[in-house]
Amino acid sequence: MAKLVFGMNQSLDGYVDHEKFAPDPALFRHWIEHVRGLTGSVYGRRMYEVMRYWDEDRPEWTPELREFATAWRSQPKWVVSRTLESVGPNATLVSGDLGTAIRDLKTRLAGEITVSGPDLAQSLTDLGLVDEYRLYFHPVVLGHGKPFFAGPRPRLRLVASDLIGEDVIRLTYVPA
Image 1 (cartoon, rainbow, N blue to C red):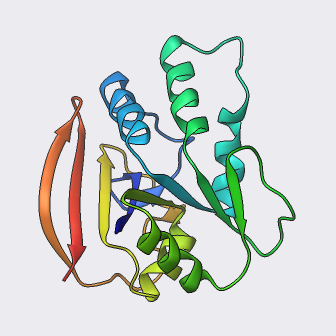
Image 2: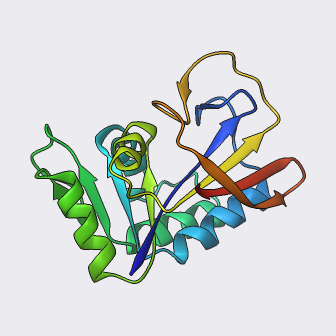
């Protein structure tokens, strides 16, 4: 049975904004290895559209960026949307009952499936389907933006903490 994990980079005050802070080389290496090891990813429409950046090589990319893109392209993706009519390579559109679709993935597959996007994660949390939360705290205070938790915070229990690179702390929680 697959484990559903929601994890994102965020500011100390709990906001996710990939344009306000970027991973250092150690954290980027962590994300490459993380994506490489995934069974797949479930995306909300907005986050999927952001991640489509990795679909095509760009001449200015470093070898590390190309490595991430290769890992991202190779994994299966499920895109939850009521408005999209099609999705890109190696992606499947999920437009029906969200709970049924994700329960089916968790039952059929083994390994780790990541959830990308706070709104989608909140919907899956409400359905009791998220098995683990990974909060990657950067030493930045934004004061506004999209919060990591898009709704009421679930009761959680801390199971691990790690320093990644020089200044990012990852806290890992499971539902209490």
